[in-house]
Length: 84
Image (cartoon, rainbow, N blue to C red; front, side, top):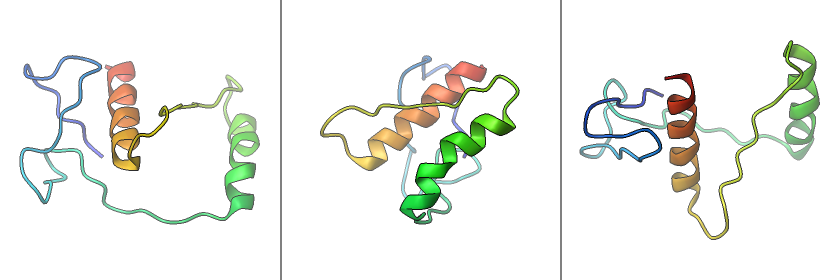
């Protein structure tokens, strides 16, 4: 999911697609979503920690009363800003 990086968006600021449907080549766009079982979700952190040399996992708290789309958007922008 590419994040548009340009002079119009500062780090930590959202950058919604210019038009819908979003163009995944230039804008943030969800291309695939799939449900996972509760067991898979519960096992993910420990499996990820074992694979990661730093023994850490990312945790994103999206806040209260936020839409799922806003939470995903915010998380992706945070990740993009973190790696520069």
